[in-house]
Image (tube, rainbow, N blue to C red; front, side, top):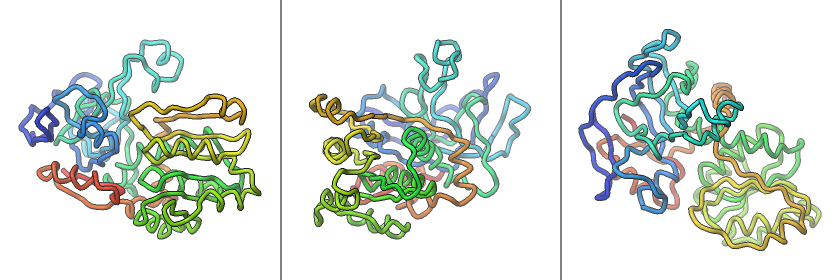
Length: 329
């Protein structure tokens, strides 16, 4: 089979063995893979991973072969990204995403940028007819956005500030909007902010052209929003979040910066802040929101590539104006 393999010399299309079907496994014929910011960081060398490695954890396809009777060949599916041990304290306590022995597809174990992938049947999620495999590449980040909503629910019409305007920020904005919050988006990418407006978010603030903080303080009676979600992908966003959130407020940290952020913890103490981090979420809820049309993802796709043009796809995806790139296999 063909795989896009990241080596010390870069991305290379290579012939690799079709993964054997082990007991309890399902082999997936991969159809679509989304390039994530983590994939870009690994490709650039900013996020460490053992090489060679097949990247891609946002992928979906159809069942090619199954060793379990309740998952039939031809079924469209998406998978969790973590393969857990089932034995450690976290797994036995029902918190498998904290597993101390977990492997993560596309990060510590070969991922979806191949024609076929084998995964344990327990991490498979069948897709309904009204969710395409391309749309399903958004399930993992959408589930993560839903987890943030669970951690920091907003009241109806409550102002919620999203810092950032990329893929994850726009998914977060849609999740909060679908649950009745009054979403405000702060970013510095004019193209992505324009996309946010196309999605119906009129309360957008360009940090280059507008005094965003004064505007946010004005709509929150001078005290700042209670909920601020940081999804910028850079350390400046963290400082912005801590600065603008009200006393007693909540900061949700979503983006992986890959670097240390210096800050004075006295700020957290004095403002009595609650800080949440999250990287996993409920897939079933994400699939349900997509199936019911509550989340728009197709307009977030900037461009599609084939596996043969995978190296070009990564080059394109690394541009600051790009929201989401799909590799179809």
